[in-house]
Image (cartoon, rainbow, N blue to C red):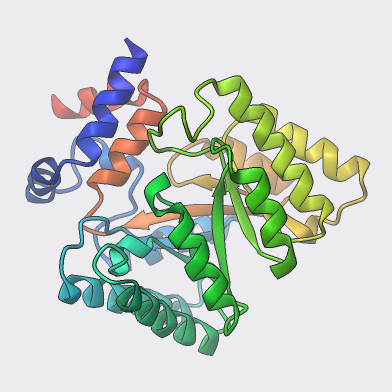
Length: 304
C-alpha cells in the first residue's frame, strides 16, 4: 500500500494538469505545512521566525514547469528578487534553485546565462547559491554546468544524491573543486539500472559519501531527517576531530521541528530549506511520496 501511494504521488508531481489545478486552489489541503507561502514576504517572515531560535535557512522560489524562455527569465528574476529581499531584510539565508526553472530543458545557454545573472547578484550581497539536483536525466548536465560556473564563481554549490550508483565517483571527481555539497538520499523515482532499489543500500552509500567528503576536508551539508544518519555524522566528526565549521545539518521546512531545535541547542549549525511560490505542487507531491503517512495530514485538511 505504501509503495502504491508513493508511486501515485510521484506521478501526480509530474502532471501538468494536476499542477494547474493546485495553482487554482492555492496552498490548501495541508501544503502550507511544507511551503512557507506564495510570496517573497511570506517566505522572509518564515525565515525570520527560524532565525529567532538559532536556525538559518535556504530559500527556494519553487518552479519546475517552465516551457518558454520568458518563463525561465521570470524565474531567474524571482531568484534575484529573493536575494534582494534577503539582503534588505537582514535575515540569515542562502538561495536554492532548480536549473530546469531557469530554462535548462529549453537551452543550456539560456540556463547558464540565467545562473550567471543570479550568481553575480549573490556575490554582490556576499551570499551563496545552491543548485538542487533533479532527476537522473538532468544529473550529468547539472554537474557539467556546475563545473563551468566554478571557473568564475566560488559562491555556488550543488546537491549530490546517495541513491545513484554514480555518486561515489562524482564525489571523488568534485573533490578537486573543493566543492561545497549538500548530500541527500534522493527523492525522485529512478530506474534500478541507475539507482539502488533497496533502502538499506542507499543508507550505506549515504554514510560512505558523508565520510568521503568530510575526510576530503570540504564543506558538507548533511540533509536528512533520519536520526540514524544524524547520529552517525555526529559520531564520525567527533572521532575524526572535524570542526563544526566544516559541516551543517539541513532539514525541510515543517518537518522534524523539535529535532532541528535540539540540534541547535547542542551547538550544531542547522539550515532549513524553505520553499515558497505558486508553483509548489511538484515539491509537495515529493514530500508526500517520501513519507506517505503525511497523506493523512492532507486528508484531514480537505474536510476542514
